Image 1 (spheres, rainbow over the protein chains, first blue to last red):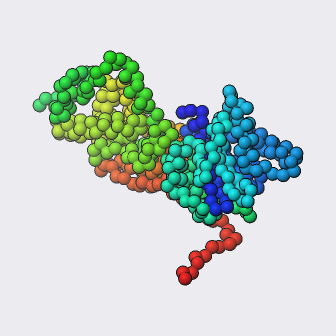
Image 2: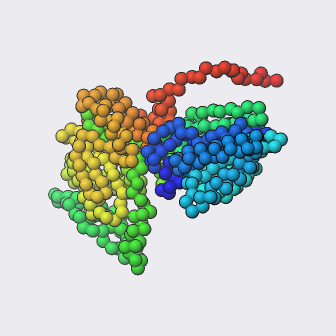
Image 3: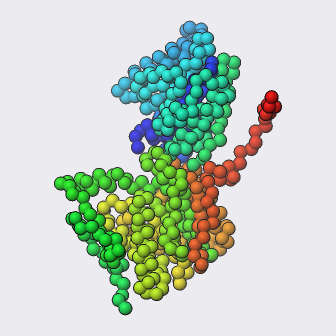
Length: 204
Length: 274
């Protein structure tokens, strides 16, 4: 198993009508052994930008701390929050700085930009940005996730329907992966509220 | 009456260039397989072994208690990180009074258990009495020993009831054969042993023993990524084996650890149809 499959993870983000949803599994494992079932993979940068990191858990935590630090500096200097596109460029630059000794994680960034237009993107471990209009996936279950999202996704879904879709896609995909699952964590973000939900999944 | 000595033969499989083995007369000797025609035989063997990488991603267990033998297993088949199936039968019915468990390569386990069943039946016909668990496990161990080093992956337990009472043997692809009271095989076995060893008593009823076996498999599926699906529990008594239960471990989790219902602040009600 490769180093990206050491801890196991599954992350997905989807775009809806003036809203977005970002979801992850909750397992932290050491190869096949499950250590924890409440690992936080999704983090809030500010009210309108979220980042979820898949891959090696130690790098997930360290990279998240570095990004929060850089964003706080930005807030002090510019006296405003970062736009999601800008944040994505920041993450890409930080990852490329470590081109020859990279952070072993693949981020998924989701946010609401100008005029409440949802923005999602994913990156590989050295910062190659991939923008998408519908959904992005990352982690050990990514191939299953691609299939599930492709089948279930519709454009312009409202928040509740988006939540149902992303939850079903996540749960059915992690049920085909030994290294991710054990519950789910979903954030649905609209211009007015952030809804956080824990999913009840198969614990095997 | 000719004594059946097929179990003693340990001849290496014969190289069958062109001559196909008729299945009917193949059982008096160790089954022989055609060898591949290649210039680099060792390299080919090495690749073949790597392909069937003996990961033994599973959890199986068996233990002897007052009322017989309890056998349990999960039902997940995994290929590396991918779950290829959640509904594999890992407890193989060799004959009505003997069970075998499957850990390792699925094809290997299925084939050799079926082969063992055939040998046991031939023994019955030749000797007019059932084969003992000790004899059956010895047949299997000797067959596997002759294929030692060729990349078979089999970690099995033979459980049954014969004239001497309940019997349990562990047999693996190295040719090892161990007699014992409690075994667990597979990547989830450390977790299963933890629950099994702390809850085990010889004087258990069938219900208590089946609950212990089910709980052990459930805990192994929770902690081990390569185990999951359905926890099947079988009991082998003096009248043969019976399947006691097959519970989905996803549901078992919430049965053992129910989620307290959250107090809903706002209850969504069905909109009246207009």
